[in-house]
Image 1: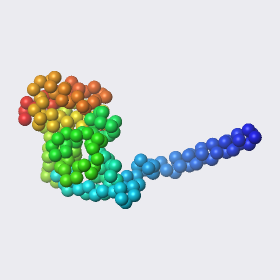
Image 2: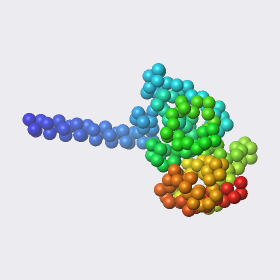
Image 3: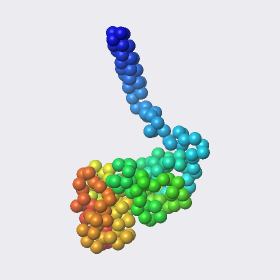
Image 4: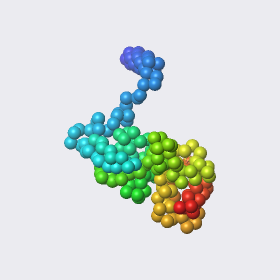
Length: 207
Ligand code: FES
Ligand code: FES
């Protein structure tokens, strides 16, 4: 009995290994077709879909999404704007910070349908001018991050910059301590905090 079981198990293992090896060699470079990678609208029944219309970086955009789609996934997966980063996906790190009607929000914490008719600004929309206009002009805070080395790996940077833009607009830049306090929702695993504060301080002084 146990021999038969062992044989069957070995066979299954061999079949699995052979299939995996074939897939790995033939499928190198192919996108993964797991359910995580499918747009949520491809998985939801029609009665759970909503059409979201909003303005993103000055452009009217429309997408049909599962009602459960977060604003973060709408931006990244449906509108092809991957500049907004997904860190924790539960409101703890600030990597997904964007401006909604000029207020900073964690895009992973609100549903896309809640941003109906809103004006959203992501890192892709912060620089002024496009290639056709003779090249982009960085937002002063983007330039300040470069001047002060306010980043290392850069993963938290889009969220830090959007949050910094709001922090300056809100007037929470009276001191380095105040900037630190009002930027405390944006974590940086590389520990670039001192330089991030310097970048915000410089931009606020020059505004
Ligand atoms: Fe939204 Fe971390 S990804 S707060
Ligand atoms: Fe790496 Fe902030 S620069 S996490």
